[in-house]
Amino acid sequence: MIKFKYDQNNLMPAIIQDHKTHEVLMLAYVNRTAINKMLKIGKTCFYSRSRNTYWIKGETSGHIQKIKSITTDCDRDTLLIQVQQKGGACHLGYRSCFVHLLDAKGNFKKVTQRPVFDPNKTYAH
Image (cartoon, helix red, strand yellow):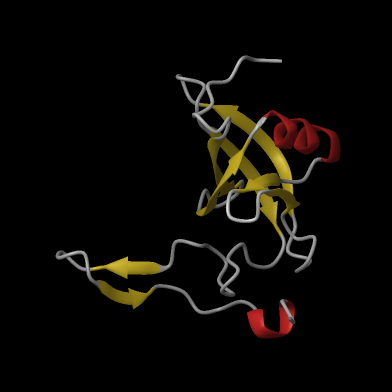
């Protein structure tokens, strides 16, 4: 396996992109274990820094990300994972996590997408 460069926590960012539209859907973190699991199952798997555990995208919501390709940048410290996204990638209900447009001063201007699912129904607590 290629030798990656991880941060001090043995993690590196993974940019998740739609394989057809090239829309950036989300950013998450991976380590060697998460990468190995992704290669084995063909779906995205990440390391949650806040929960200190692994998670497979869509295991709760059903909004899975089927991996089409994985590339690394020239420094080998970031992954670009192209996926076929089922449903939305964002836990707030949007297709992409990148929906909050800022103005020239860095203030919130508007949301750029409509929700594709209701997170209150999808993530019942």
